[in-house]
Length: 362
Image 1 (tube, rainbow, N blue to C red):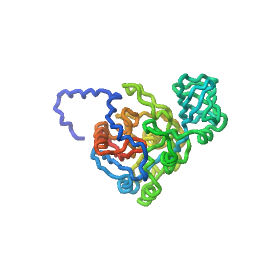
Image 2 (cartoon, one colour):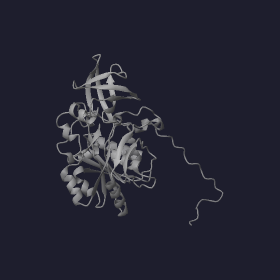
Image 3 (cartoon, rainbow, N blue to C red):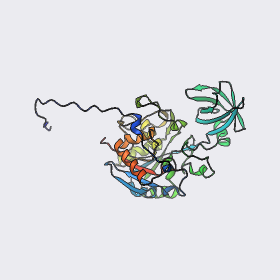
Image 4 (cartoon, rainbow, N blue to C red):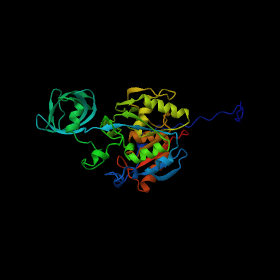
């Protein structure tokens, strides 16, 4: 055993006391013109800012992703599909109502945000899209429990509207029906797209496979809570909304095989990352099946599964910005975002992307 070089009887100075991070630590100035309002004509034409574990930055193109990964790596993607979860209507009194479904809770029931001049009461009815009546069952925190007169998903898909994020300052257009879904979306249930996956198209996926990079899927249905701001300075007081996920047997087996051969687990998006970290035991082994997660990742979290993260740029003071800061270090992400703004990257759902190596030295 190596002997300590510390002088005998020399008092060890106390470690410096670090102030806990607050909400303001995750703020940054963003010019409005940086927020992408429409997608690029081609999915894989986006820019890609690479942030290495040593904090080095490189400006690349998303189409170069196969060359930035290593044969034997495994991409894990979220295959959730966005519902037409925004519906407009009227209460029996004639008051205007906007409903944003948070999640489908049963065959004919949903949990939803309801915006109205006066809060609807239990037992009341809301006429939605002049097509069907929803019964108000009651409150559940900031949400409402509603019962639809039939299959909830089918009614939502038939009569609802695509719920573009609030920072996209236009109504959903016909082109968004395709572009606000990933090309691998198949499991209906989200109210927001897993936006890191929007950059992939069929030719890019084929090039990844040809290079020997594996592709696996998980499902996490993104809730409306993803747009809710953090309202407390003390981050320990913030509570995430619960979201449902599912990890198939094939994905758990692919992750185990990738680790055994020394490959890396590359999460496509924060939703895939949160699913894998939620499904992992303390040693990083993945539990197969369905579950619910309210995992809130902030700096200091120790990642057990994911080695590399592909993600878009995130809103100031958001839980997703806190997650990427935990993955690479707060100062590193601040420097990367400054660089992105200075060099004209496009932000948020229809914007550009980052590839981030996990930094275990923070």
